[in-house]
Image (cartoon, rainbow, N blue to C red; front, top):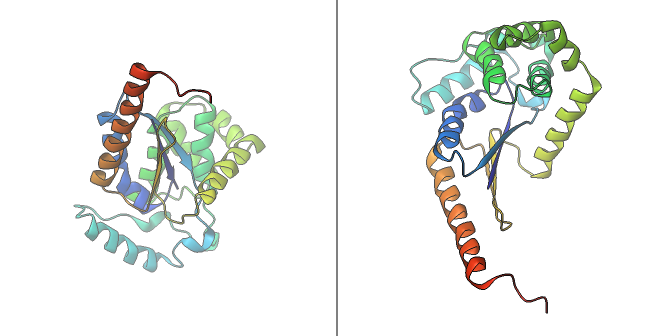
Length: 218
């Protein structure tokens, strides 16, 4: 069983989804393989102004019953919705062996909680290097590499192939070929209900095979 989490580092809804991701990993440890992938937002998906960004933050924060409001200080109008830098740095960290969530969460928190302008590559590198204790020069070198850009482009293509538009997105797949795709949902219950059902079906198939073997060839 595998769960793939498609995300954008500075997405507010991905920020709200992180507790669900953490709980899934805890609840299904040893039963499910977990992986996150970068799914870059299109420039036009970002707010057009900081005031607009704050409006969206008020809405999402209220919907999530959050005790804090997100910080739009990371928003820079001159970037015209181009915020690849923190995503490249997150992928570079993974290329250097930092495969968990700590580095990318540091970048997300720096942006949407602390208002740090991680759209600047050097700033994103500094934030990430300090958070995980990695050499900043090496991290920047890898973040600027063609290999990392290709990896981000490939994961973005995987996301587009799902024919969905909202991040976060969760793709659930089991060993018997079942697949469920959740686009834009951040709450835990729909995901756990589906995972439980898919795991149960997989166990049923495994039990049947134990008793009766593989199907006849003809």
